Length: 158
Image 1 (cartoon, rainbow, N blue to C red):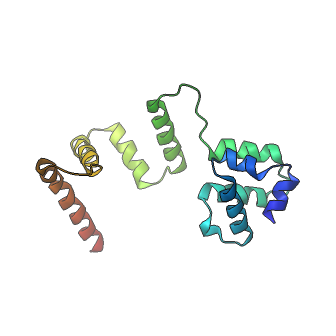
Image 2 (cartoon, rainbow, N blue to C red):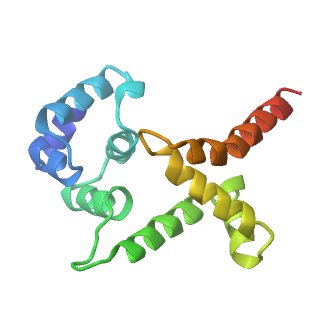
């Protein structure tokens, strides 16, 4: 069982919960789910960690902590600004998903200007979509967005 393996490594569940920024009861619940093979109820990052622990018989405390720090949590240097944080998140996504359509599109947008007008419109639309109440001008502006989404959905069905 996972709980015993964690204990054998001289790790405390509370310590793991702290590293993963989870509550202790949540971590215990995830361990219980893992032992019951109820993997769908476990946070994906935590499941990766549990699999790492279970699949590596000789894994120890230091290896688990290193795995968490290198693979599961974003360690931010003191004073890191939001732009650097955003770039790190973007880099992480692109490295993890190099063949995804989204990654290829982002690369295309960076390398040429084909979509600049559309992207500016979509950015403005995304800001409006987050608003709780829209003015009439906002609604008129978003009509193009809704028509585009409708056309895309219709095309996917065909």
